[in-house]
Length: 504
Ligand code: F6P
Image (cartoon, rainbow, N blue to C red):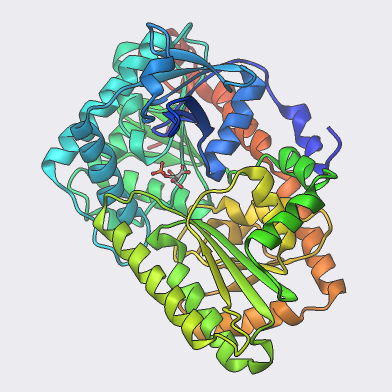
């Protein structure tokens, strides 16, 4: 390890893990030539957890969603991954079309996702989706039970798809130590009341020994809801319900800093940057980038409006700026996602038509596909500024990836104050995506920022991002789980030995 992120490595534990998530880290398909192919799931969270599993080993349990997934597993639905250099085991769990549609598309993504993000999209809750959510969560618990070698192996559950898993697993294996990380925001108690099954969700989550959120505000919202909705007792970081104690914390997730650093300092970077510049036909001196899943929470239309405003305010920039938007299609079966894609398509076409120069230069390059990490680092390295303009976001790892990629200490991060990342990355140019004029002024400032200021800001940002990478995030959660798990379950030898605090 050579980079600044190496400081966190010392704290890493080596005990194997069980990680559980809806989305799998590797997916198998057949190419047009009929040959079997595999790909890595894009997205910061998946990349971050894969890094952790490569390091610790163990089993990752997830929904097998790839068309060729079934053809590569053994008779226990397992395979070793990464396929090109196995380090841990992937156990695939199969869902029917209806299970996927109702548990993932319906309850998780039409219900919980808009419930937890303040973005003015109406959450949809259907009783049938809820029934499927319960059923699929129970199946995940059953699968963990099958894979769990010993109760001492920590189980690390991910996100809003799996809120009920801990309660179900607890029924089967009372002494298992479980932590769940909630990657997205947790809503205020007033908003949570929209959900008819909020109490079941709260109870399910409180079956974990440790429950971690991205930022303190989410943690506070959760604790308030547990108190108001269930009458749970709260003291310090502990929430008690029916004699069971859950430690509730805020631990912001980080990126695999050293891996990004390796790409950013690789001698092949320059060639990759040149290739990208040619492919995207960028000839302007100023380049901006945005990289997002095509999700209505990401504030992409608002960002396009700000660019539009910038070009209107600063005619001197016409023909001098290219903004590259990478949009990864996501959850496209859901109407609100199809709508946002259409809105973005229209805006890009409209802005390009209105700001096209006599020489034919259009300000926006829009690419609808995911990029491999090496290419992503090259794209970030080309940029004079990177925009993260979420309307609401648990963390936003793109902001941290951009910072980690800029080993040249150049580039300006323009970051929404409504993303969790803004709590830590205070040296970014902070914007409010609802304030189009203020946003455009920040872009103007980014374009004109003197090199010395860019350097000072980027150095400070890098210190923050390197100092709390994904390994530190995981060690903090798992060390906390292992250290404090002993007071967590009533009626067992462990809990009888530890009396637990009086919370009333
Ligand atoms: O940000 C929340 C999250 O669930 C991440 O964990 C994940 O990277 C992202 O959304 C992608 O979601 P999906 O699995 O629906 O593509």
